[in-house]
Image 1 (cartoon, one colour):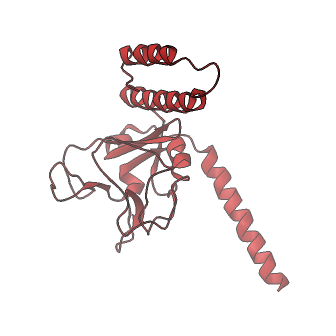
Image 2 (cartoon, helix red, strand yellow):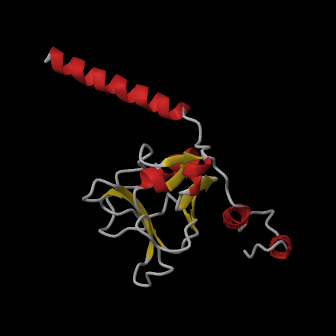
Image 3 (tube, one colour):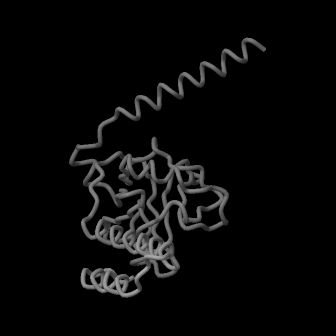
Length: 202
């Protein structure tokens, strides 16, 4: 029994050492490696951002652009063809497991031993990990089975996420304000109009 406990403790120490090594790894900078990527996954304010770089499907990716019956995007052999930032890995850890047979997002191992990452929807998509539904094969982010990249978030994605969070905050504060002594409906209408002029429809 003592020997078994020692082995378990040794495994825990190895896991902790591996995590420490991974945490200290710098993002990939080799141009040849980055050039081969089929997609990049980054994150901003906890939201996962997908961005397909390939323009058509090949042996390393299956895309909806030329597979009309494919309802999403799948990157094969993620160890070589999927770039993921550490921020995106952290965001993915919030995705709950044990979803449906076909979920919104999955990172799974195929019969040939390769790891594949797929998501439903267009090549460029924002995924909220707190509400995303994973497939029942989801085992969490496979951070050792991808290329670690810089968290370079597209500006358009930042703007969309910021607008969404401002809209959410507006409704949260408005709900709390309604019915209080200082609630002024006209002031909230004015604020709503100001946000509308900035491109945020609440």
